[in-house]
View 1 (cartoon, rainbow, N blue to C red):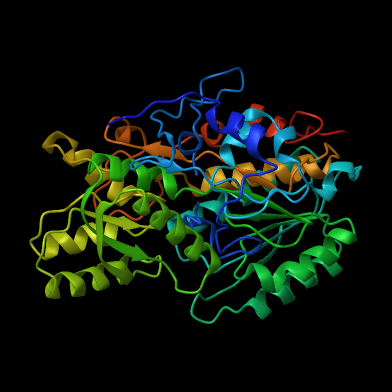
View 2 (view 1 turned 180 degrees about the vertical axis):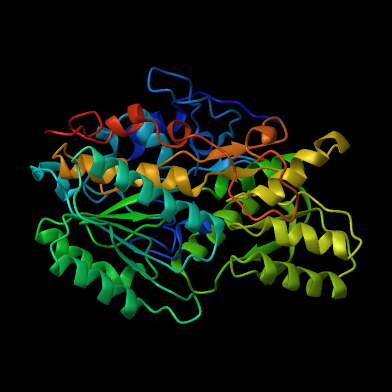
Length: 446
């Protein structure tokens, strides 16, 4: 197991084949799903074929890697659409991260944006806070705003349009809140979109007025949207199939039906399975990206399907509920992919490594997502020249070898919280420098 490969394998392939390679485009191309914690998330540096090493930026090593290719247990090679022909002009590390990306690579209109004078008025448009990830993300944006205000970089109060209730939130409600703050004169917006297609025209209109919008977690069809994304499905899926040695019965647990990001994640799972002819999908259930729902659906499935299940492949933040279901049913817990891994399942994984339990997944937290999006927005407003519309980031590939780094101390299976992880591990400044014309974070000008 533990396959290794050249750091620049994908970059070299793309450089040679970008103009002729035809791939199956994931159905989420040019559109967005729901919250940033969905694993919408979400490829890792490891998944894309690079190993991040410590450098002067303070970036930590991301650990294990998974080979790219078309063999079982490898991340499928899937070049994204590149309508502007920009991909091969990017740094090889950035090219690597676009493997399997669920949307096109486009040149950003913010590349020639001259920026605005400080201080900036900033807005936050987001979903109802229905997870530890969202709560931590919103809190960190407030922290960053207050720090920047003390330095004179931003002014006033953080303008917020956060939907109050997941059960009643609608795209129209979110669009109205966004348009209101643009009319009120914000200079830039951070966003977790409920529906990317629906809000794209408003993002375009705001962009034409010089107001950039940084979308966290998913792609968006507006060329003016700046997507800070964490595709995180394929690496953990491929590594788990590698652990199975490409054989066995698997149960697939899906997220919210119909959401483009869910379809993209599902397609990534199925692409990995297709490379493994001895893997059989024995069932598909919907967990709605919710642990309680995933637990109930898994229990119902187990009650009527007594056959052996060798692995469960899920596409975001549902491993905790799935593990709870197997334990409650008195069944052996198989490898459950921990994409979008949270504190509960990571602590369980850590506690069972000594028993020989193996699986794989990806981990990043709300603080990391907020910090990355904030730095990107500040750089745009400072006129540093963003080269591309989408920035794929670096959620850690979690395996038995490193799970103790990401499981919070004292957490149990029932803990509801984010994994640990540093901002520079997830989005190193040196990496962000590679997608901007001019490097460096924003400093106060007064």
